Amino acid sequence: MFAIWDYPEAAKLSYFALLNLQHRGQQGVGITVFDQATRRWGMNKGKGLINDVFNDASSIDFLTGNCALSSVHYSPANAINGINDINPLKYVFQDESVSIAFEGHITNSQSLRQTLEDQGTVFHSKSDTELFIHLIRQSKQPTMIEKIKEITGDLQGGYSVVILTEEGLYAFVDKNGFRPLVIGRLDQSESYMISSESCVFQSIGATIQKEVRAGEIVKISDNGLESTCFAESETMIEAMEYVYFARPDTTIGGVNIYQARRALGRKLADEDEDTQADLVMGVPNSSLIAAMGYADSRQLRYDLGLVKNQYIGRTFIQPTQELRELGVKNKLSVISESVKDKSIILIDDSIVRGTTSKQIVKLIKDAGAKEVHLRISSPPIIFPNYYGIDMSSSQELLAAKMTVEEMRDYIGCDSLKFLSIDALTEAVQEQNSEVHLSLSIFNGEYIDGIGDYKTSLASQLTPIQKSHLKGGKYVRRV
Image 1 (cartoon, rainbow, N blue to C red):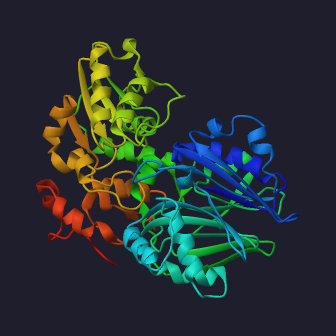
Image 2 (spheres, rainbow, N blue to C red):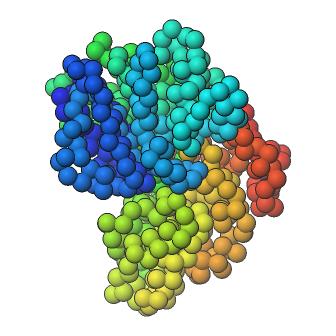
Image 3 (cartoon, one colour):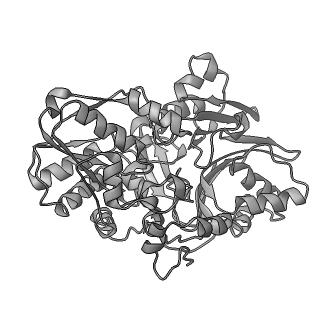
């Protein structure tokens, strides 16, 4: 998400900002604008990448306004059901107009939807975003901030939300701070902005002002920047932001993603001192940094053995398995001269379903590699993610169904090792010892519970999942 208040060409600036957030969603994109002088609103959105939707000047020139809210679309639970699912959503009421964008997942959304529908509410999308606006409109509190404070008490899950109204921008994150949100300011300007990642700011000439804390509400208006809290809690950042999701030039919780991934590689090397190989390779692009850290730590040769087609998006966030598999085949190719007759240590950031790893190992071996030792710079993903990343079913998780040796056999590599949970935490905390991680996908401890999924998860627990639970508990409330 990206939003800005009081900038003359807000839509065009949003377009450039979104280009730096494309990695967070590739299913759709939208920009909403509001002009304070004319009191007019505008919107354009559609399915596909940013340049698919905004493919010529006419697609953005009509979006005139000095305030904007924009978003790239990523659906953790299902594919887009229609244009109404693509954020931002816009609503016109008798007393106000509102646009809203959301990132994350509400774990008790089905229960809340059912309650609202029983009261006569009509939903027009499958998006959790719409839930926020209906809850806000039902609140009898006098101000938007008070309304937000009231509705957050009913919500479970991980979320960051930005709301554009005619009086200002409102931004808030869940009481645990799973999803990042950061405030910036244009250099030599009074214009404040909000972004899902700080990497946006450098590209458009802005500086970081602050990160939105767990349970914090920020308001940006003509009066400047205001802040209040609806909950006091310890920030628990989703670990996969550091492992995979965020861009390397982003900083979250005072921790630079590039440095964190390099440290992940070093920690992985420390736990894998005995493996012998001719060279170390990383899977482009998210694992190259960890591979460099691994190679440096063990003083092994690092080389580029896989080439990524930069015009192919992230296969991990494709909505179906068929599209993910097709994406891998078109995304990566092997430099045969680098791998032929060599023993390879291949670094990847994670294994989710395992099909991508299997295809990559096969590509490398077909190119003549003698051995492929797969090393993962995160622990095994054993439990579903319910806070906004596409890992919502145990049946999709290879590590929930197989032992490490069974996974090795399925993938076809010569050996397979994962980073430990302690090493992951230590790598991130090297830069900031105060950072705490949400590790639910690795250990089954769901800090904010799992709402409507509690019964289904209990019935789906595999023997491997049960063996990793502490005291048989798969939900932990704090």
